[in-house]
Length: 344
Image 1: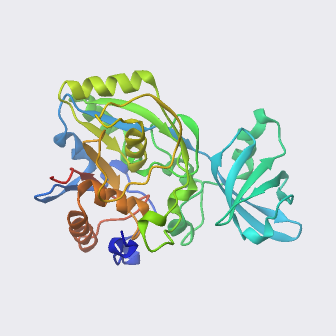
Image 2: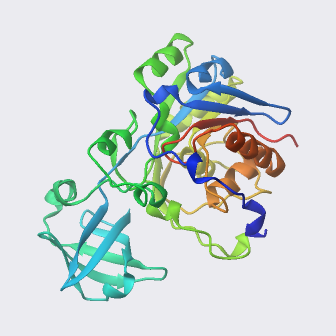
Image 3: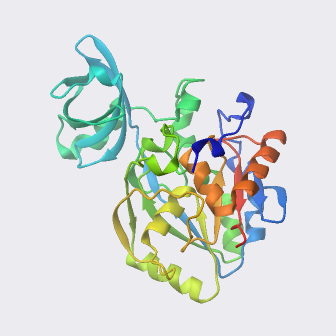
């Protein structure tokens, strides 16, 4: 499909630079094939039944943006995929300053470029013991806010908590699963009162999620792989819920992509541990997910393509036009939407 089909104009003032306060004060646009409903994320429970299951991504964002030098030249790395405790794939800027064999110094944390890829990608080996890698990033890195926020203001202490979900458990992401940012203790209590089940999966979101689609046709786009895991216990509980007539609600496109990667053609969700580079565009047949809670995405992005596949292209164009005109806040720190699937 032509990438331009997924383009739209977004005024700069619709881009959220901070989350709503409190987080659960965010708005939510319910998108059904037949109508759009303006409400708030606190009312999510009103659209769920007792047999339904919310699936969250429990990845934890690490401070994966590093600024340093190669000799006298300034360089910046954004980590995006862990190969081992001390070896990471990263996007380098400027990439030409990070050549094979170069040593990079991030204010005392050093690393060697051990592989050179396309589109500014480099593989980096850090010169620290494996047991100290996590602390090294905490000391030398900053939270990797998306470019559309970081270009408008500096990262600060508040982002350390704002850019982390209440579900964060497993270190490894360098971008937040932002649909989960809306959840608070108050929201979870409302879900518990209605006995809505919650289950966690893990997908370590990479910085590749922010890369622009540079091809003209979606079939030519290459997704960067991300590591994910669904335990056998979680898979069994999801399949049991569906067998009872419950719906699977993915909180975020990351949860959805992992669930769809783990499902077979009959809709059975299997345990999963490994990489996925699934790229969902209109025409895809969804097997595992019945509803999707997600933020509002960039024009021509793989995520806008995904939601267009799920809810229908024209439905999503109408929804985004309504959201823009209605003052909804977009992107990572923005408002939410609850998508129902397109009718066949």
